[in-house]
Image (cartoon, rainbow, N blue to C red):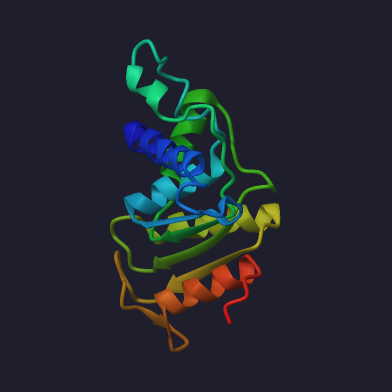
Length: 176
């Protein structure tokens, strides 16, 4: 898990470092994923810049010096499909730090109520954390669905429609 998170953070730093070359607006960074990708998403948006970076020094991992280490980024929004916060729980258990606070990115969570892989309670826990911090988010229980319920619908809307609507609302986007 550590290497995957370190790579995800390096990828975001690369995007910021190359944003002008590829005409990317870094004011609207949104990250998302499903299952393990969603777990990485949560850690990417919530963890601090130094997390998953400085634990192994560049002398022990010389590749670190090629990952735009001085770049910073701000994640505005996250999309979590049947993921959880296991990486942040690990960070907390090892370093005794809790990274959640009221400045965290807005979050869309969709999770199957019958998920045997990443339990529904993981999504509910994120919902509870976000409620306690007063951060704009949406928790969509996918009733009677399991892990990877890509074809799920809620109130006649597909998962992609629900996600799109959330992102438009949360980032106040004009989609004319």
